[in-house]
Length: 147
Image 1 (cartoon, rainbow, N blue to C red):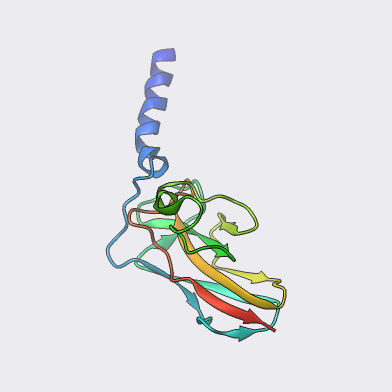
Image 2 (image 1 turned 30 degrees about the horizontal axis):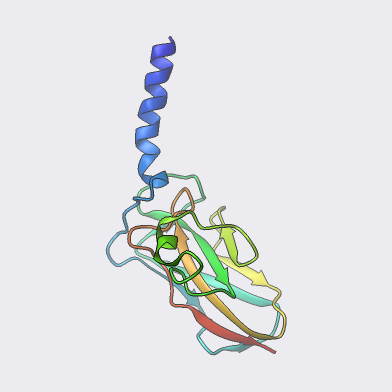
């Protein structure tokens, strides 16, 4: 019985390994973008930020389904891949902190309370383990001004 359970666990690990081994492939033509919010926009707080996705589907974190992922919103930080860890960041699990918002339940929008001033926003799609796809599905970083 122990051998059977070990075999089942090993087989399950093979099925989930690509998502957690930072090797989740990107379907051709996949793109993530902001809906109704453009670079240079002047807005008032609270700000509704809607996430668009084409060429893939949205699935909750820890859900291993081909051609899906979940959204992450990067706020007030360097463009993804140019931060503290440079290009290595593109292969690491996206952190969760004040500058990295996770939407692991499959959410496609958020209402943000932002103080007045300039703010940067960027979307990055993560796989089941919060790791960017290969290559990463990410929007351009935009700058908005909150009045």
